[in-house]
Length: 266
Image (cartoon, rainbow, N blue to C red):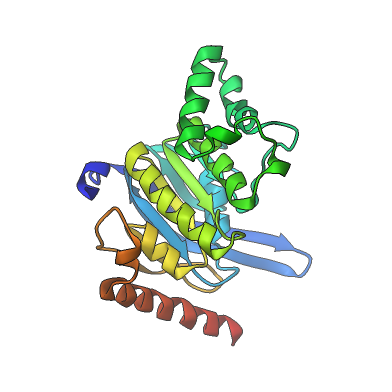
């Protein structure tokens, strides 16, 4: 089934020798140093590493919210110059408009596209149903659980039809049961919607469950230490999560991350 969800021939994201330095009153902080990575069309890549290793900085550069000091970042062969609707972002904090209903939150970006009203409704209906919130379309964020709010954020991102989806620890604030269900839902959505996904997480299990490749970042300054191929079939299930192959991959990645954590403490 995985073969039906991906075209791994075309390069979607091309990150070349990226360096990012933050200048502060206490001195310069090198967040990223010589980071190079390619992602293929429809690929799902997770990035893990110790706190402060530059994961979010790299995502912000891909989104166009930040700019590298050196190097080149391209999507579909074009250098990133700023934010774009072609790159959807989902943050850990839901970033919903509290005064808008679920439907109005999902439709917000679509209205900026000046689409016809019936087309906006068709699109919002599709993605609200996709995340299982059809019965809550008229609800406000304050009436939703944390998991439901994040479903709205994901639906809003997908509704804009981005070719690249950037997710910054989107399930990090959720309880374990909700997190597990949203992970499985995200896999199902990714397989049907055929988006290229760049997903940041601190959770090694989550990274192995979701991705085709896991990128391990070193402690600051952030560099790519290791890339691990996740050769497990899709759809990923709880049975796969309990398998020996899954445990072996998790242990390999966890050892790399923990060694970087120890190096950071020295």
